[in-house]
Image (cartoon, rainbow, N blue to C red; front, top):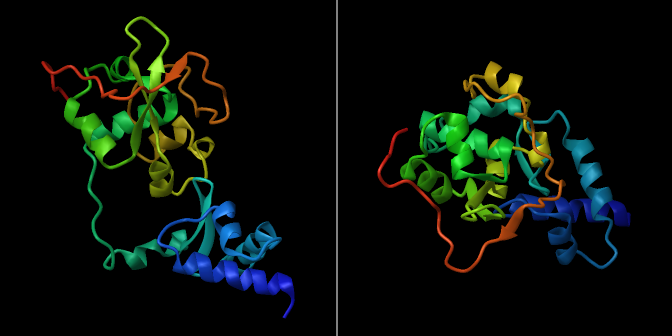
Amino acid sequence: MSDVVHTEREVEALLFAAAGPLSDADLAKRLPEGADVAGAIAALQARYQGRGVELVEVAGRWRFQTAGDLAWLMTDERDEPRRLSKAAQETLAIIAYHQPVTRAEIEAVRGVQASKGTLDVLLELGLVRMRGRRRTPGRPITYGTTDAFLEHYGLASVGDLPGAAEMRAAGLLSLDLPADFAVPDPNAPVMDEDPLEDGDQPEFHTDFLGE
């Protein structure tokens, strides 16, 4: 058996047994030194293309998952995920497309003040995280999405988010958004944001909990 085929089998076994997605670095740590991880991944993608199970990249890591067109077969086998309220879906969409974004900026797009409960749910589910503090008066906390968000929606990176028109067509977005609403560039430098400090907590209006 050639080294290439052997590495491919090893990577296949690791991905099937893993509890979550694995990065190239994760795989390399478990394989003999010099193993061609990228070549093995490419070979596995080609071999599984069009099969019932496919090898996909999510948040920069690899996992096997059911082919998209067969997802309906699994509906009776999976637990019903926690459903997000309309307010939570809108808030999550705004954070995803405007990140890094402050609470005040979220409110400006939605047209209502952000509910403590809404942001709490998104933080609790791990779909959203506090990123840093904006370099503006008051130094408000900024929010962004997480790797769990990418994994949940099957995205390799934030740059793979669908456009606003596609979101509206899918019924996932019904807001009157500003003209600059666009997919953020995950590689763009953030010039007006400082890292979080110990003890930083989310900021909310406690006197208004409108959704």
